Image (tube, rainbow, N blue to C red; front, side, top):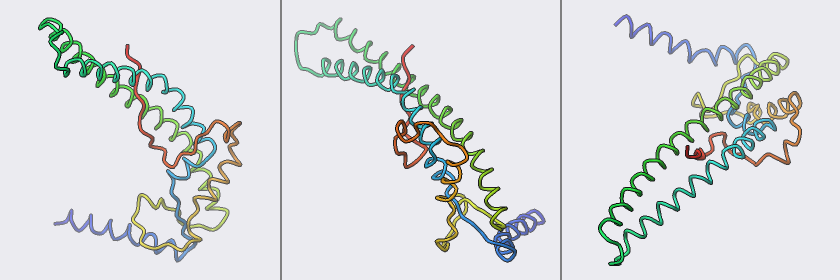
Length: 196
């Protein structure tokens, strides 16, 4: 019972924090993931990752086509395949399917780790930009709208666009527009890895 009361007290204090902060100063909202993905550096990082993993994606597509060709051969009602040939094709198909799954899992894991590392680097710089901006402009609290449910916010509270502008000004990227593909989200589908 005491634990429940303590947890309830902490929860209520957490809920009161935005109100207390608002009473003392301005409150701002940011979409941190959207801001990171919209910066020149964020776009370049994602474009570089796509480029890095393109050969692995192509290799996986090649393996998928091989699997499809074997499946087509096995599904054709032709008497040309002997039982031995059919067994060999079936074993080859199973091996290729296992390899495809393993290589896909490895590629997705590698891509996610590289993506998370790139986003973390940009995110750390973004947090410093937000902190500086908040202190200079009298904000008592800046929250991520994706982390805390917000049911209403005045338009002037969203700082995402301003933070992207300030980030890009503080962290210019050479050829950011030329090499970057527009990314709506940082969580792009993971490309596959090259067979070993």
